[in-house]
Length: 297
Ligand code: G1P
Image (cartoon, rainbow, N blue to C red):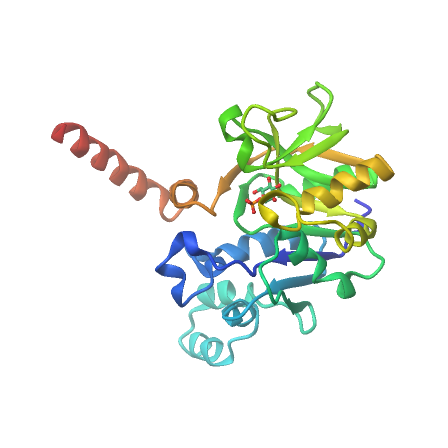
């Protein structure tokens, strides 16, 4: 695979109010799905797609995110002394090389598009990926890698896309695309959080993007959109008008909305069940729990 995309932006400045009080003292992205923080899933996915530079757009109180990917010398020494090689390996797999991570601050919560724009000086004149860590995607081939492979054919801009129920469309960026079953679809328009019943399709944008530097440029020029925020969707929509080189990519895999409590719980069950060391016991317990609930009805 000829991969030209080496930099990825992770917008992680959000306050995570939906998970209060948990997020009073820890960043939402550090909340754990089984035994790994949410951010780890996104970083691993980017890594698997050939990303070499990881740019976190943070805000106050997000220091734990940087620490998580740094070395932990005392912990490593202790595990080494005790001969706990499995744990040591798990720990070391989280280390990123010096200089691989950069952070920039978003000083004010002005929207996803604004958060991405905050990384403009680190991106320069290169294509870049954006991963929203709230969207966790279980897939045999990691989603961003699938996209990078498709993008090597198309170039331009690409977003992960998935069908959603019509009554859910107003929670997403929605694509205007020709009918068809091909995974890569040329996009002729897109709208952020359309009013119920006005969506151009039921194909929603999911938080994985491969973008050209021009989209970054548009982000610096566009006015606030849906919710009074600078929207990434609007900058990409402008690029559709300018070059038309924008694609939706129907990925293979299951997406979990870990920005909601219900989605986080579902992901916890699905990832727990998929684990060799936990799956069987968890499944037994789930059956037991369901039987108890049924008996009590
Ligand atoms: C963001 C994007 C939206 C996209 C969604 C996917 O919305 O603005 O276009 O469909 O992520 O998760 P948010 O969930 O931040 O409101």
